[in-house]
Length: 316
Image (cartoon, rainbow, N blue to C red; front, side, top):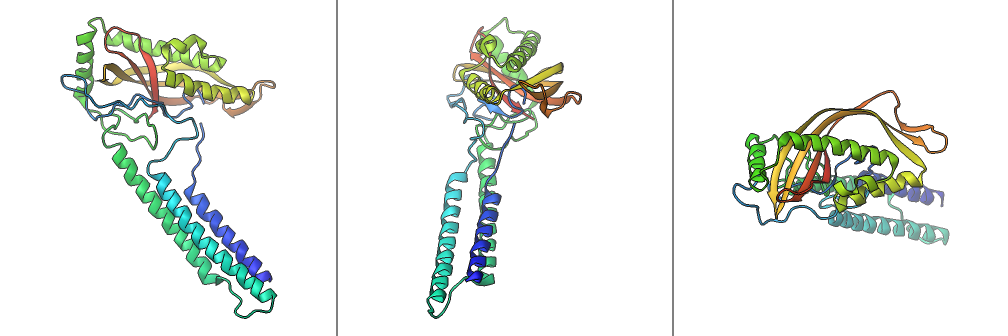
């Protein structure tokens, strides 16, 4: 009977191996969580040359943090789970049937043996490799049309992709914006981006978005508030100190479906650490080692001289 117990334990270990190779985990500090979030990536690869495109922008609500769906993962994981489940169920049934037969004196005690265990582990690994290949193909296809020109796509799902910028895109996009807003000035826009960056980081550290609700889209308010609710729940404060913005530069400009979009690169450094609300103990980050980063903040507005709202944050 003991050898059948050993076989069952070995099978379960193989199941654990397959599960670990298929599942993935994510983690994230400062406003935006050091990750890409929100909408704002255009749905075509170059700005319109004369009039806004009729294609719909990727402005749908992003999944809640920790629930990003990987392209092509659902069906393949279900199929892999079905195959693995069928194999495991059959082998476990055979093992238990063999154990029962041995206990009652029946002939032909079953069991999968060492070869069966190796076959199971090998099959699980092949399934994992197949899923990984299909996912990579899906991501390549998904970003073929909406690749971000100067850094990371602000993704609804998947991994950001870096693409070399097209030099004429920014000037062409700015020319289109000036056609509908003669007062638009690039330097003033960069100043606005810097001001909004400081305002949002301050609101984030205070765990209160009300002072900046007028410069955020509904989607970004929801994303920020979800993260702040986690800090409040855990009684933690994300502290941001010695913020120094080294450079702000317009990286991409386009128009879609009656909306202006400008993505600005922000190169900055700061002290970014999280403390316990009651004790003040540092639970993550560092009070002495500054964090240097470059992020891409996308702002949008209805075409014309209208207020800009933050619609997405992308990571390089």
